[in-house]
Length: 294
Image (cartoon, rainbow, N blue to C red; front, side, top):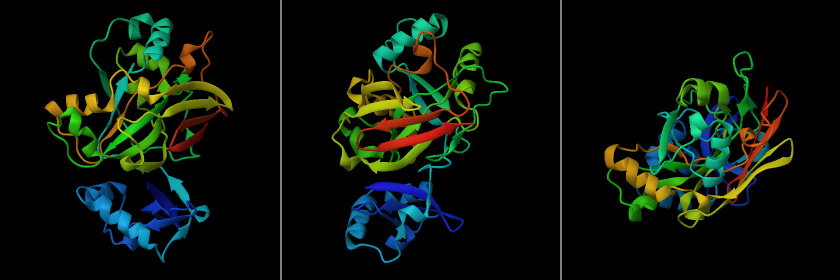
């Protein structure tokens, strides 16, 4: 199932895409009392997904045509900062070290975690604010994002899949000079408009675990990144086990799993984004997240 947040007649709502992909069934029309996706995730914890499947199977008289709505990021305002993994594909680790050895080089036997502030995630077809008054080198990073479906604490690897609601796509837009200058990545990845997300959350039952999905990005139609999530250095199960040992991953937590090789900084010379560029982030089984730089 594909869970969406959308704008219809000036009102934001959560819903699910119909089986044929032409309509949206509003969550409230299916019997779920929630005001937004964050609230719906809380409701879906436990047996909620099973109830949703049954409701979708019955159809919905209050369905809204997909072409009559504006899709928003599936979680427009995450409850907490997004948890991100850095340098989590070997080929990207190598290109990053070539670009800036001081910032990205060295051995990393443990996962690299950082957080990303998301005031409001950018919707599919929305604009990426380049902040070119302060950003010199604007870069793109396609990433598979994991959405936690229920509070997770002390979760072993073999149980990790039970805590995943689903998956979406994010573009971890990055200001490379700011990222390197401050010796950590929070500021350079957290400017307003630096987190396109979408087009929806695909529920975890649509995939095998761990997910092995083709992952790509294109800039102005040119293929830049082309890999597979099976090449993650630290897999989804490892990440959930490791993080949940010491912190509770609340329902609705978004974990971005890292980007493969082919980011702009990996080219010689580097190929950074400029105003008017269109970026497509594509993951098999999820879809395409497309945005334009302003």
